[in-house]
Image 1 (cartoon, rainbow, N blue to C red):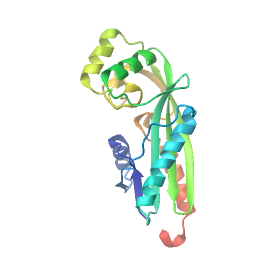
Image 2: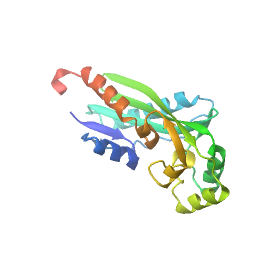
Image 3: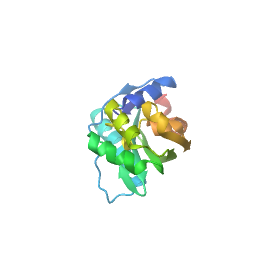
Length: 193
């Protein structure tokens, strides 16, 4: 049985390798900028599903495809991946001294069933001084990271605590994903196993 990860994220690839899952990576080429009129939970599910569907169309003989999307939400405002230091600085100042939510939408698709879910983790940030923000920006790490903080990197020193799945904050809630993969396998044809 073959598993495809529909993601260009190196973090997701590392997490699946860490737990010993055999898979191939196929980039989805999906535009992750969705309408702001969607609630954060709806948006991550929609993007995760779009990624899986896009890869499914290009790989008709697939067994299982995993699509995922992770965002940061604060007061129902979605904070995507900053493209430059100005955007990253704005996000860091907004999140300083607050608790925000990291949401990952998961889509697990087989030829005859699609499972969708969202996992949320609360992340409490310490209050950041201007010097801390400027120093962090010079590392380049915040660019391209949802909410401008990389919890598995230098940004770890700004996280006071988390409530929920740590791996969700990195980009893939592993326990929930494995549950969904087991459920997907149970719906597959016995000839595919």
